[in-house]
Image (cartoon, rainbow, N blue to C red; front, side):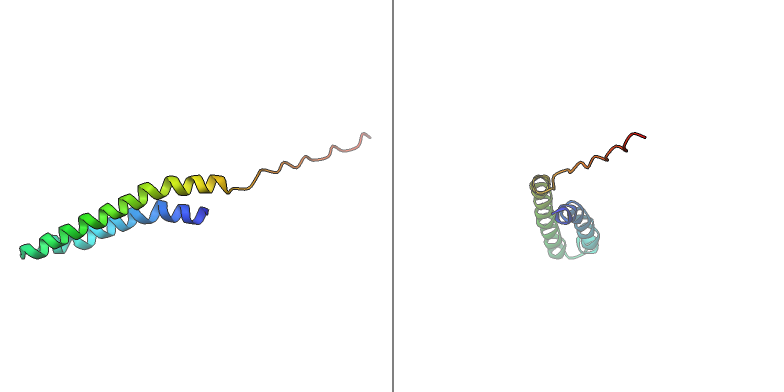
Length: 82
């Protein structure tokens, strides 16, 4: 569960940065239709990643807290008196 939590916490921001970096050349295109299509795709991709990120982190955080093990305290026996 901890692995999925960290995956959902770190992957969407990296994918958002990659989406912005990858669409830069298409958004700056001379063709208006290509630029508009790239902007529409970028907006929908970023919206989906934001929703996944903001919805997934609290859910997985609660699941991670609910599935963690109990603390076991082992007391060291005191040495016998000499």
